[in-house]
Image (cartoon, rainbow, N blue to C red; front, side, top):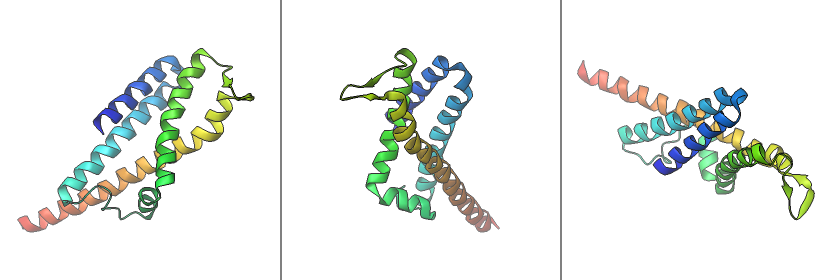
Length: 145
């Protein structure tokens, strides 16, 4: 997971340099990706549960329970970033087997929806983990009384 976070953050940082007008967006994507996963793993360690077993949120249960959706979102996010990198240097790139289909179209209509859904999942992970940590903190405060 650390390798995934670091490589995605590095690619987003590079995209922020390549697309200065979108730099804030790419930096924000780094922040939500790292913090949502860190909160999620930390909350799992505090509750002694596997990170996929502690989903109080229906949306997260659905996401982790539907492997095709999970796979699509993860791959779409990474392919979106890679496509944006390629498009910076080859703005007219097209699919070799379908020359009328540009990489920009694939990026916009295939990769972007999955990437955006992955950001919703990241926020849901963050929110769910924050709620779990609040419960843990409240229980610890009750024990101290």
